[in-house]
Length: 151
Image (cartoon, rainbow, N blue to C red; front, side):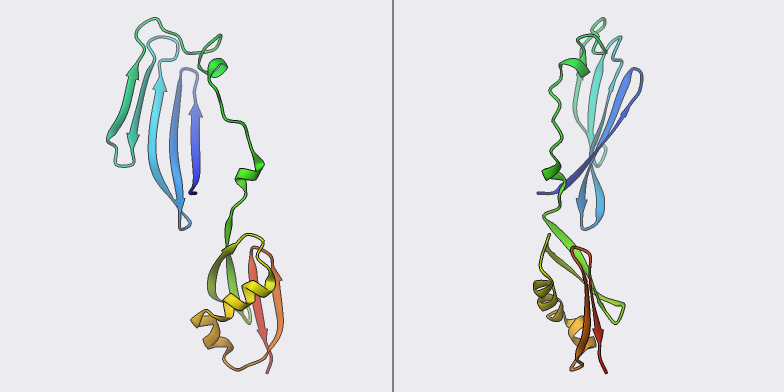
């Protein structure tokens, strides 16, 4: 499942929205739109990321979508579920002697042993560790593994 961000900008007689998907740490716009004229002649339009219209609707003169019995009081809005805000995977920074040597995507809550095993399999980490003993491992769950090497 992709992480998505919905941005709403509600004014006195219009609502603007944009939807973004998170891909590889970047936010990619997917669609945007506008619902305007809420008290006079409501109009809805939506565009894709390239700006092409993908939908539009007009309710006509005299139709009101604002306040008393309007859009916000009659619409079925999703409820907040904190479980859906938790990431299923995280990216852990892998350091050797405090210097970033790689990034490792793992399941959220992965154990230190699992992260360490997978980190040592990364080419850049293995090259910097080589045959030197690991004197200490500093592990911050879901964030960081720093391998401190001995002499």
